[in-house]
Length: 372
Image (cartoon, rainbow, N blue to C red):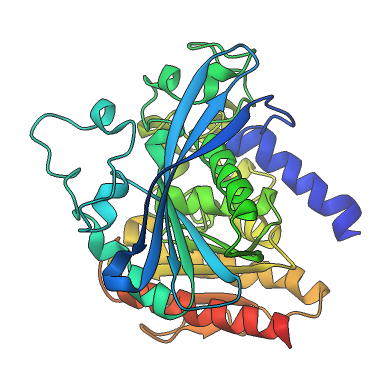
């Protein structure tokens, strides 16, 4: 009954009333160009590849996005991979000077801004930790798929679609979260062709707005076996009906391009919603989902994020899987690793090495169980 009736019903509601409907076929062709490689990256720990995606629409219009991939050296079998967008360009995730800036950097950065300099967000990218665990890491600047502004739709992949209109949006037309999620699946397409990647061990990870994106991508694309939300808050893992911290009225006013226009009907009207975010997490089942919060990130409602993960367990139980054991949120730095994972750490809205350690431990547990 869940798989044949309720799951499709919920998927339709999230599509038509929150994130927008992902086109069944975009008729967008993708070619991959290896533009740089380094077999001794990270002091010899990894092979680095930089792959330019060339998108071409049926209307002849083109678009480009750049993938940065690190694959651990010295492992003779295919390796799992963590796929995660970055905020300010591939060059900001590492101090390695051969990493090429992402294509839409110049469009997005403001004059004098230091957000886009090399290594500026390296603290969020525990590449060496992941590589030593035996994981590849693939990242792309999310602006390459859809620049994060309602005024920059024309610089996204959308103009490649024949039905594209720059100014007028239908009620259930996908927002940028939906487009970014589509981009995650295009990265998965490439990774399936990469000879060193285990296509059965793909992880999608996102922080903040990209945590919302990771959840929506993971719900739609079953190739992602582990789906990780880091501080995703409203419209992500947090329960909307708690109306705590950022709410629907604020998020749709500040970021009108993220969701479909129909989502606006729940602005200051959360009680009318026929669904909530715990049901989004449940749509990942029987694959694995992980939610993480930060103690000082009350804007993202850590308690609401935990309760969402807890209530999703009802569906996991249908598959004889174990959800979170208690409605009570765990203490700081006490991760819970069942078939659903959760932790809350000290600190602010961010991604830290502690988060990466928890995610890697969880994924190790998931993938080692698959091999048994």
